[in-house]
Amino acid sequence: MKPTILIKTTLAVLFFHQISFSQEVKKETTSTEPKYTIENCVNHFDLNKATKTKVGYQYWFADKNFTQENTLKMSIVEPGKSTHAPHHHPEEEFFYILEGTAEFFLEGKTVTAGPNTSFYCPPNAEHGISNAGKTDLKYLVIKKDLK
Image (cartoon, rainbow, N blue to C red; front, top):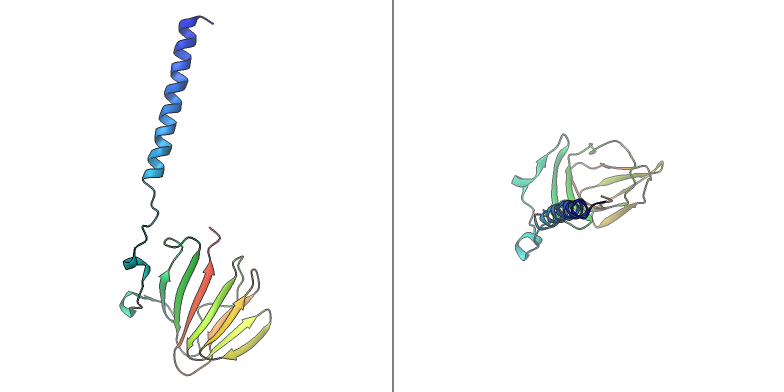
């Protein structure tokens, strides 16, 4: 190969690598990672900011777009209803009852409990939660996001 062709080829390869590197740096500097501050790390429940569902409301204290890997949601479910039918997913999940009476379904069995009770659902286990009382059921859902 002639020296001028070798030099031109080498320069072209270096130029291509420089473009690729600058695009990678640009991607890193324009990341959408949240900036954590005391203001956005403290979240007070506001029913006006809650999402209306078919059975009540849900309010995300922290979702997968904000946290590193965990989510925290409060569900408010009307008497006699549930957010969805029993289901399963690869993430483990915790439920913590704040108000009302919940019926927790896990792998074919159920238990009914009230405030200050937690329910744990292991990964891939069929589970569900419903309002078994005469007042709104209010509970927290804590889940690790598998991304």
